[in-house]
Image 1 (cartoon, rainbow, N blue to C red):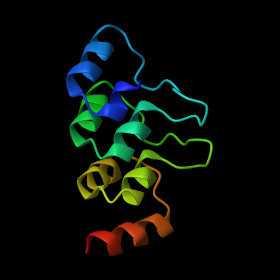
Image 2: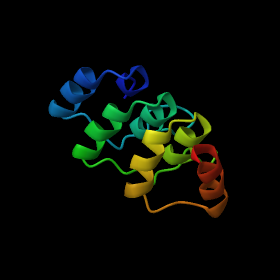
Image 3: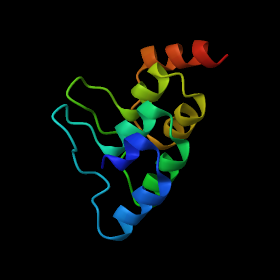
Length: 102
């Protein structure tokens, strides 16, 4: 869902209300809507995706989860949100996030 990359909550919600698939792979690098929202630091979009049952443990073709992309982008609020919802958190990412935020 390309709307997630733009951060438009209204568009994302409209698409999901009309039957858009929240966990669909959306591009050739196998990223999902959650990846795009996390990469851009769009916290409100992530909240909207969560309300529609998004899976935050999905990986792209490089093995990155939405949490990885949020951490790389320095989006602390998104990292906290995703860290509370996902099951996949490697120790190396934990230490990277810990030192980035604190």
